[in-house]
Image 1 (tube, helix red, strand yellow):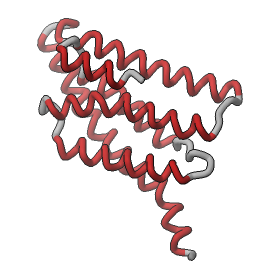
Image 2 (image 1 turned 30 degrees about the vertical axis):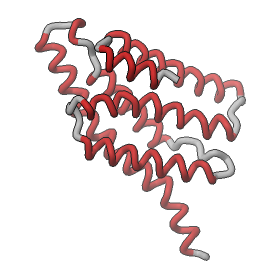
Image 3 (image 1 turned 180 degrees about the vertical axis):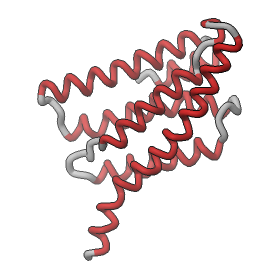
Length: 165
């Protein structure tokens, strides 16, 4: 649960610490998922809790970036609405509704975008860091599109079953 320490580091101006927390949080999430799949240890609770941990890790820096006006607030609201909608849908799914490949790809792209957007200024020249921040900004938009598209793919089967009632 690196979300709170990450946002506290950002608020304190400790950009290098925040970046390292984000990287470690993402790597530990990937390792945890890999170990669960490899060991056959996945269960419905893990399928429910892992996406929630991902959302905290991703949403905390997004909130900070929006508060710093580095991302538009409307995009943050759209993404947070999507995450709440899918989390509510997962709550009612018997198997925890594990992430689809599109959902996983969206998370990876969001993560990469955030790493670039949060790249510390002290880690390069102004031009290089500005370029990384710009690349992160441009990667954010396809990740938002993928988030909305994956939400539609999660909910599409739900719509077809309701139509059969």
